[in-house]
Image (tube, rainbow, N blue to C red; front, side, top):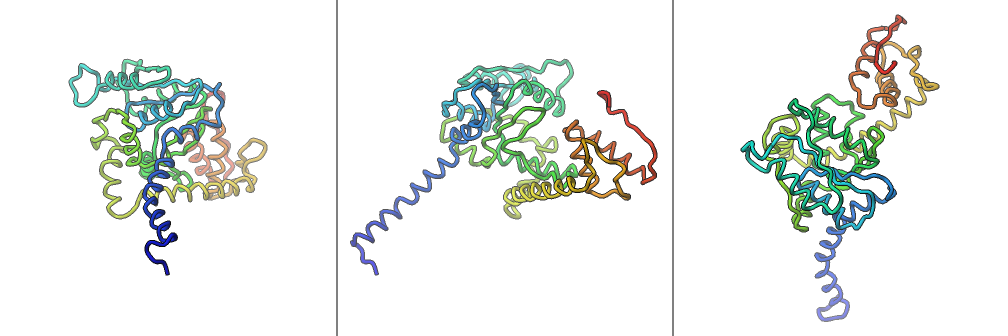
Length: 325
């Protein structure tokens, strides 16, 4: 038994009193943006050309602040894309494209490159994505402010498009696209935590008013579908778990593909496809084509359709895939 006033009880009371402070300290350390940035960028040499993709929204402006606070010294450029969708003279609500660029310029502690949509035709989500990818493809490493909320939205978007069970992983913290390394230091933070850190550090950001409109699939998912699902349970944690399970199943199936003999000496062995073809055959074709056209879903679907139609008859057929193929 412990009596009040004893040395042991006094120590226990003092320790209990410090627990909230310790919890707050470790929470700040775990979510510290500068620490997360340095942890992500550390494996890459200072000689690499590094782009910070900065839109002016809260997550990317927090990324810009994280870079500044980290003290990282390297070949870093902040890249801002002006999509010409909200010009200053359009009279629309919310900040203009020019306002976003000014905000980024004031906060940037590294060279800033502002890219303006160069084509006469109106920009679309697809052309905007392709344009950004082309411009960012000029760098070795690209760092973005994507967070766990973006990842959950991407998973639901994949579900709406009928994605394979092997492709239900959300946004990866570290990935390679088109030979460019993409880093997402905030991938483990939820939107609420990003807002909390931005507020704690006094970060300024602009809100794109179009984000609150339920126009387009992603906005419908963000503004309507996910809020409804969250009333039923912790859908975010379940989707994160589903993403990890998808990764594990994918690794297992890809192991079966390697053992199947369908891929041999850099070729996809059509003569070893049994009919009706199975999911294993489909995955083997996908693995093979990823070495040539990693983002060309239509090419994959076209070849798979021809394989299914062949019906095991061994009919000769060919497809013009372009680029000499």
